[in-house]
Amino acid sequence: MRSKVMIAVLLAGGMLAVVQAQPGRGFGGFGGVTGLVRNKAVQEDLKMTDEQVTKVGEWAKEFGPKSMEIMKDKGVEFGGKGGKGGGFGKQTPEQLEKMAAANAEISKVAYKELGDILKKEQVDRLKQIDRQNTGVNAFTHEDVVEALKLTDSQKTSIKGLATDLGKDSAEIRTEAGFGKGGGGGKGTFDPEKMAEMNKKIQKAQKEYTAKAVDLLTDDQKKTWKTLIGADFDLTKLQQGGFGKKKD
Image (cartoon, rainbow, N blue to C red):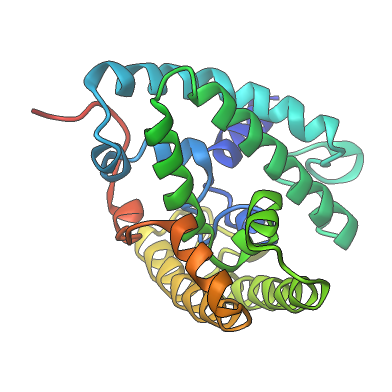
């Protein structure tokens, strides 16, 4: 049970690359609303007060178990046979769809609850940073699809790009030793390999996002710029930590 709760916390924080690289949320292990709002660089961008930072930290601890319940409700399986053991079950197309649905619901609930802590303009900016971090997969989110008024042809093409990114990301993780439950080494966690892996995934993400933007009309591109706002240095999501801001 402890391992499952940890998975829920990691998923809520956007730290499970196996999920984040699939159509849904984030990429390279640094996406997810909970992880973003607890990142120091994001907190500074949002101009969060010390009180807000403290409340967000407390909220995040409570939100982990809630994320777990959402995943269970969406039918996401954990572990091996019978759901035993750590990690997710077999990554079948059906399970990946369930993960994507769970991630979408987790994000929806998270933003709603964060609205009680952050100001509207802070939540709006957080969503912009989230979309930048999510990249090509952001084009599959319901609110983005509606805002851009994507055609069926565009949605099909973008879904293909997201799928290809997922495959490329999986290959990058496997090459780095993080595939199929690996941790970058036998029984060890190698932060340097993790950093290098995420750097490669970031590059792939950027390339696929550019391809998605190329599919948009000029008016859609203008709307997309509004949806992502001012550029945020995504490398800070890897460098930052959690906790209160220093004076």
